[in-house]
Every structure is written in C-alpha cells, then in structure tokens.
Length: 208
Image (tube, rainbow, N blue to C red; front, side, top):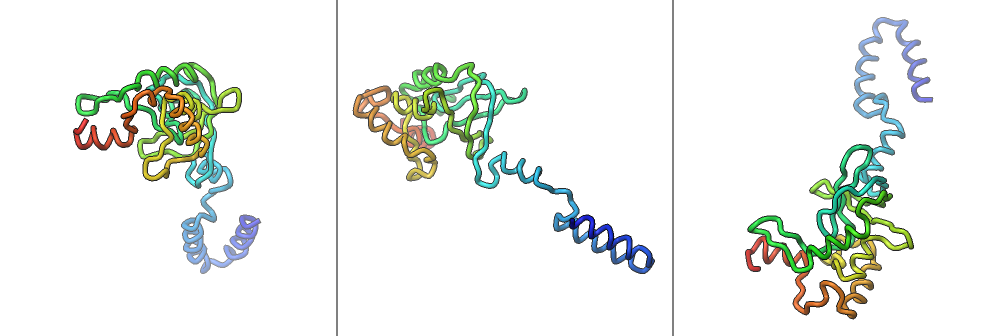
C-alpha cells in the first residue's frame, strides 16, 4: 500500500519540473530508512534463521565428522556446518604440545560418534558463537538429546562455566548428578577436572 501511494505521489509531482529535485532528495531519505530498500519479511526471516534475533533455528543434515565429545560437523546442503552441543562440556582432546588433552577425551568422542556418526539429524540451534559454531541441541529417537546422553553416561559435564551462563537445558544437571552417583565415565576419578578449569589452569597457566 505504501509503495502504491508513493507512486501516485510521484506521478502527481513529476508534472511540475521544480519538484524533481525534492523527489530525489526524498527518495534518498526513504532508502536510507529502509522503506524503499526492498527489505521484506523474507529478509527478516533469514536473519531469524541465523539466530540473530535470539530465536532458535533448525539445521538438518548428515553428521560427517565428530571432533570430540561435544563438537561435530554437519553436512547441510553441500556445506559443512560446525556444531557445538549446547549445555554440556566434554573432556578436551589434545590440540598441540601446549594444549594437552584430558583423561576420557577419546572415550567421550567415541561415545558421541556411536550416538550420531553418519546419521541425518535435525538440530535445534540457538546461536553462533565467536568461533562460528552453531550451538545446538541434538534430538535423538526416544526423546532424549545427544547432549543429555553424553552427560547421562558420564562422558561430559553439565556446562557450568561462568556460573551456568551457557546452560540451555536444566535437565542435564540432574543427569550429571546421576552419572556422578554411579561413578560413570569421567566420574570414575575423584579428581576429575572440568574442561573449563582445564583450559584455564593447563592451557593458559601451563599448570597441568
């Protein structure tokens, strides 16, 4: 409706030569505000799909690589998307000499591979982090997520780094306590160090 009214106004005013300069200036101003830019609902939906407005978005694809117990690559439309499981933190694998891995890191990676490796999945994602990873829940058959399964089997921690600011699913805390009570996985060791503490103490401070 706005575009139709603008066209009628232009037709009426163009009959007078002295208004052309005024119309040009008005058009520039309108374009700057986005009225004439063509930014319709489709553009807004695309922004929402990328999680820029705080809403969740979906990713569907096939798991082509598992990097560790909480990170994998999903092939989506011919492009690999990096995915980080939300609400959990798995033991760190070795990155280099200055960043050694943690106990149970390989077991955690293998456990995630057994859950999702090679499968076509639809993820529920919340945002992209500073490393351009999609932060997602990974629903599985049976109603649980891969995130929950990793914690339930003692293959990852509930992510309480920064007083829980990365926590999306409060259920994982209860699952962690169950795994801890049973002494599963990482909880076989009484001196288990959380990954966020490991990254700080061992990788940054070199106090492994």
